Length: 371
Image 1 (cartoon, rainbow, N blue to C red):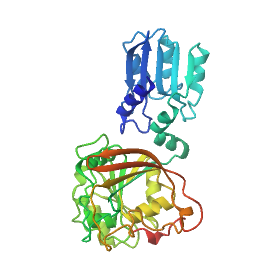
Image 2: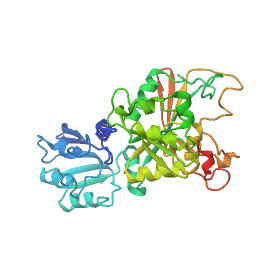
Image 3: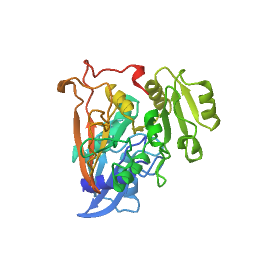
């Protein structure tokens, strides 16, 4: 039943932030009588959806996350379960929100409800990793994404990179884009690929498209500048960028931010706007600097079913993740494999990223490392 609740919870993927994904199943006399999930901010919570129109007296509720016990946009779900006469609540994991953590279960127990905690705990915690991170740090959960050939290349000898991954993989990336608050690329990627960075078809959110261009290299003819009607665009640059370059981008309706350090400015922007999830799509310098600073939480790697070859082709010497690199294996960034799936002809790898090792060459990069 908890596995089913997890399946339901994932239906809210990309829609619930800054709230968590939650699923609920109500079982009475051995039969499922109600199901629910949190469909989005301001929507009814999973427990209330599952209880709606259900004869729940004497039932057992399976819920991926501890029921809330405080008043927010909706009333406490713990109270709703008590009022419905639920006799037992099985909770996947406790809520990291200090307004709730442990209090929802305590409230249920005080009213005679039998409560069990920790069923499918790891899966339930994985489901709310970004929410837990937001709660504990106040900052966004940061995804990194790249595609490479089976022999580790990120482009052909001519520099062409469209398309290393297949159509199914690209569809999955658009789904990821539609679940985040903002998508970030550097000027190198912009110049090479001229990306739109939009979601096709329209996604659950319309992410802000962010270009990091310290020197003002990206021409106004780029599709990012020409597609402002499709969604907001922010350019983060520095005082090295010509004033006229900034003026013409601003005239297109693009928001221009100038800062000494582009990544520091990106972090400040994300926190000021309370973004919950960001996607870094490249290039290698941006990814390298973000990994070095310990900012990346989750990595999505697409291994295309192609051999590009060529000693001069970008990668493995020109890694998808650029400088500063590790001098030794002891300094390498450690990853934890969270998921591995066949994606058409490709393989999609999803990793949790452990904390960046301290010291050595894998420390904080200088501003000059950012294109």
